[in-house]
Every structure is written in C-alpha cells, then in structure tokens.
Length: 312
Image 1: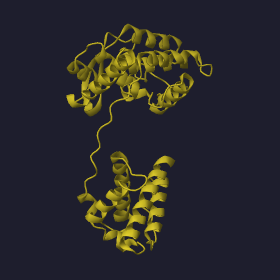
Image 2: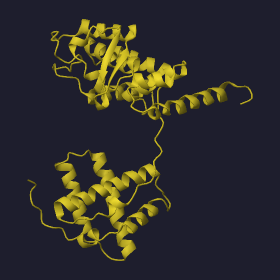
Image 3: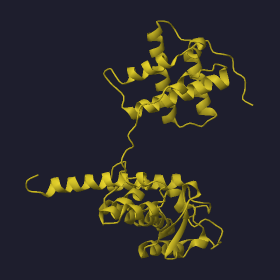
Image 4: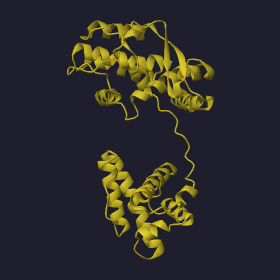
C-alpha cells in the first residue's frame, strides 16, 4: 500500500509530489521527468491565466473538457507552437498527472477522458542505406575495446536484424538449441504470432562464427546470445552498441537497431518484393503497417531522380 501523503494546497505542490512519485516509484527516466514536468507546468500556468486565480486541488478537480481543449489550442498557437505529436505527448503527460491526483490525492476528474488528442500522422520508417547497413555489420569486428567473441556476437546480432528483419526481442529470444541455424527460422513475434523467416547464408555464417568464438558451454536451453557474465544479452546492450557504432561511422541518430529491420523491408521492396510477402516476413498483422514502406521507397526514388536526372 502506498504511503499516505499530506494533501498539498496548490497545484504546483501536487505537481512536485507527482514528479517525485514518477521518479521514485515508477523509475521514470530523467528525460521523461523533464518532459512530463514541463507539460504539467504549462498546463497549470494556462489554467491560472485562464481563470485569473491561483490553482489548487479543487480547481484541478473542476477543470472542464472545454478548458482542456482551450489549453490544447493554446499550445498550437504563440511564438513556439507545438506539433500534433508534441501536443499529444503533452496531453498524455497531463492525463497521467490527473490519474495521480485521482488515485493518490482523492481528486478525481473525468474531463480528460472526454477530450480527444490531435491526430498524429504515423511517421514513415527511417531505414539506413545499403552501404550504411554494411558498415554497421562490419564495424563490430573493428572494435578494439571488445574481446573477439563479443565482436563476433555483436556482428551476429546485427546481421540477424538486417538479414532476417527481426525485432531485437525476437533475435535475443533465440536459444542455443536454435543454432546452427537451419534454412528457416520459426519466430514468435508480437501477439504470439508465429512466422517463418528464411535464413541467408551470410546470417548463418555470422552466427556460426560467434558460436566458434563463444566461451560458454553449449547448454541447449541457454540464450543463444550471452552477456559477458553469461546471462542473456539485453536489448539495452544492443542499443548502446549501435549508438557507439553509428558515432564512429558518422551515421545519424535514426540509425538504430530497429532501423535495420526497416532497412530489411525497404531494400526488399526496392529489389521488387511484393508487399504481401514483406508483411509475412515482418510479422505485421495489418498490411497498412507494411504499406508505410512504399512511402520510404517512393521518397528514395524521387531523391535518386533529382540527383541523377540532367533536367532535375
């Protein structure tokens, strides 16, 4: 049971308690705390200006849907208007704030449930080019700070993401009994949906090279990819590793592990694969999710045209 707290008198004091809750109980990251705190501060400041008085708990309990919509309109205007995506994130933060007020400070308000956030157009995937993908796959072997088996492991993981279009969680869920890899992999993805993924020779060779270098016993139930101390390799390790590699290669921040999965789809599409086949390989439940890659491919086509055509 949560420890009791003295009811704060002002909205600012309630905001401080909420941020403390996020930090200590929810283990929110510093970036999340900063973003949520900023959104709630702007929300409270707007209410004070709108009502012409300081805001306390009673005021927060009485906020109307019309006031919330007015706040969103305010965010869309001014010298620094927010994008629909940023507005949606701010609304999410304030909803979390009101949920805390309801559950911890006995200050319920159902108004925010009646307010629909701005429509956010889903962003197109941001793949890396074929040359950039090759660079990311080759770079682990040049890392002087890693043991040979670690470099082989990192190269094998990245090759799986790009060569098979796997999510990080799917690649790291493989067991030692799955290797040596067969011609096909049975992958269980989101929603426990199972799909069959072909395994390229380059992927199989990368995993074989890692197994040859690995210092761990071949326990069939152990994770295929192991950390230095023998435990399972974590997604955070893969993300940090790619962050380091892209810094050495001069790649943009969009070059993430998941970008390799996007690149798998985009490069297949560019080579003539049909969307239905790519949908099956990626394990997308809806074709509309896969169709986002047509935007990426069309953009690349127009860019190539503009760069190469003498009349462009």
